[in-house]
Every structure is written in structure tokens, then in C-alpha cells.
Image 1 (tube, rainbow over the protein chains, first blue to last red):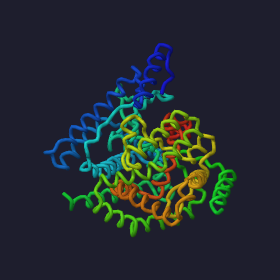
Image 2 (cartoon, each protein chain N blue to C red; image 1 turned 90 degrees about the vertical axis):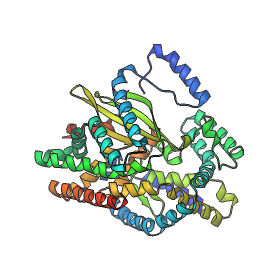
Image 3 (cartoon, one colour; image 1 turned 30 degrees about the vertical axis):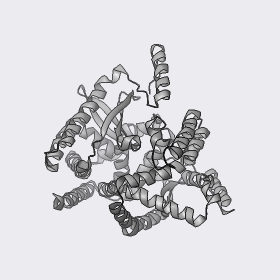
Image 4 (cartoon, one colour; image 1 turned 45 degrees about the vertical axis):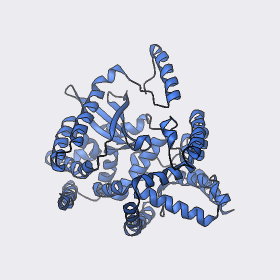
Length: 214
Length: 244
């Protein structure tokens, strides 16, 4: 949360009292984060519309959600952050292939969850500016009547005037940091091409695994 | 007596443990990787061959609301411990709220099987002694894979021992019944995350590293109550070019 200015202290006090009385978390809005919250809100709204569609097949839903996510996420930055110091040792061709396979990997693995949607809602609970211009938008996925909520933070970075998502932090676990630790470990013993082949193999297996169900 | 020993050993491990930084789950937080991987292989096999199949069968015959009720019941038993740890972390409001939560759920909530407290604004506070130590500035220490209990660190394993010693059931109820109910608690909890674990196994390229990193990040976030973490950690993640 950002430090409150004097003008907001009164509202903060009122919010706090309300929060203590009702037990709901007060929401710290900052006008500066409007554009960033809007990106997350729009993505959540659009994805929820697709998920709630009872007519569409799982495949149709997945391809719609893929389009929405690809538009909101800066996958090039995300890939570069995931590889970190190893990014430089990949040729431009390897970087492109890595980005493509990694994108597909996320789609294959997280796409499996589409059919387990149980009317969860998304609520933006706050946002904050990070040290060097990045922005974090905090959300909560509401499920199980408040007992099983999941905290999801979105890290955004501005590129070409637009705010794009560069990381998803689920219950404090950053997707970028998690995959980075795995890739770092694998790249200690494998070449970039071997790593890309490994992800491709895993993707093919994931897709084959899905087929009998559809 | 054995319990006291556990606590002493736990504390000795914490205080004597080298202060490996757990930042972004780099392997320098896992000096005992060989040992840990061996235990992990055992745990993973036990889960695939015994625990997951049993949990799947249990999940099939048990209605979801009942699973939720059992989970509520066991969570309610831990609320006094959550509250105590809240107090130890300097959060008296949370501690007071937990007293109210325990009273409400133990009575109106039918001995904890239901959770009306959440609806009237007394949410669960996920606090344990491992987190308390973290708030007090104790580093996580080396990553430690516990047989059957899963991922931990030297700090969190010590915290677990203290939490267990502070759990009153051990002193009043026969040990086998307590162990049996702990096993049932575990089975019930496992049956509620069948899909999540299956998905994690497919998503991970190295499941061991996936679990280690997720555990360390999640515990760090919990110590900070999901608020802003230190700049150093996030700079490592989001500005890797600086490290060159």
C-alpha cells in the first residue's frame, strides 16, 4: 500500500473503522493506477464472460481466452525475465522458439482448468507502484464463500504507451520466478536447444493427454 | 518428554542453522539437495501409489460439502494457535478476532464443522510459529524435505514442532487417536486438491524445483502477509539485467 497523504487520512480512518466493523478489507485506491487496474479488470471481465458461456465447447473457450490473454500479456518481456541471465546466451532464433513453446506450455497446462470453472468471481483489492515504474494490481478470486479465496497479483509494465502484464503472482508465488528457477536448474546441464525440445515434448504430451477427453 | 526434546532439537537447528537466503528459490537455499531429492522421490511415490488413489476414492464417495465440513473442523482446532501466533507477531486485533472466531464456530458453527464466523467478518488468519519466527527476523535456513509431511525449511520445521507442542489435544487425548485424526485431516485435505496437484505435475518441467520454489516464495509472502516484499527480491526477478 502507498503511504496515505494527509487528505486521505480521514478517509483511511473511516475505511479502517468500517473494515473493523464489517470485517471487509478496505480498498486502497490510487487514482494513478486507474489505467493499470483497467487492464486487469477488462481481462478478468472478458475471461469470465467466456468461462460463463454454457454453449461453447472447451476448445472454443480456450482459443478465445488465449486471444484475450495474449493481448494483455507482454510475452517477450515475460520470456526474457524467465530466462534472466540465460536470455543472452540464446540466439535470436532460439529466443523466438523459446517464447513460442513457453507460451504454448502455459496454454496447454493452464487451459486444462477451463472446465473446472465454478462461478468464481474476481475482485480487485488494491494496487501499488513498484520501485522503478512497474505497477502491481492485487486481486482476489472469490470462491468457497470466502473460505477459499485465492490471491492473485498482476505485475504490469508500460511498453509503447500500453500497460501489459509481465507476471502473475499466485498466493505469493511469482510465475516468472518459479519457472526461472526450473529453467536455471535445467540449463545447468542442457543446451538452449535441448531445453526448447524438452518443453516441446512436454507440450505434445500435455496435448495428447487432453485428447481422449474431448 | 519426547515432545520437549523435539522442541529443543528444533530450536537448536534454527539457531544453529546457517542463514541461507531463500530469495527466488535459488539452489543456494538448498544445500542438502541430494538428501531432499531422495525424500521427495519417496514422498512423490507414496503420493502416487497410496495417498492419491486413496484420496481419489475418498473424494468419489464423500460429498463436497462434507469434505468442506471436515476441513472446517480441523481448521477450527488450529484457530487458537493462529490467534496466539498473531499475538506473538504483534497483531492483537487479529488475535482478538480469532478468539471470537473460535467461540462462534465452536458453538453456532456446530463444533467447528460450519464456518459462520467468516460470514460475520471474522476470517481465518493463517498464522503459525514458522511465520512468527520469520516476523522476528529468523531466516528460513536450508530447505528441508520432511518424510510424508512435505516441503519445509529448518525454520519452519522448528515452527511446526513448537506448534505441535502447543496443541492441547496431545496432552488430553490418546496419541493414536490424535495421530489417526491427523492422518484423516491430511487425507481429507489431499482429496480437496486432487486436480491442483495433477495440474502442477503437468505444468512443472522439474517437479522438485517447482515445489521448492513455490514453497519458499509462498512462505516468504505469508511472513509479510502478502504485502510488499523487499525490493532486493523483486529487483532480482524483474530487473535481471542489473545482475550482470
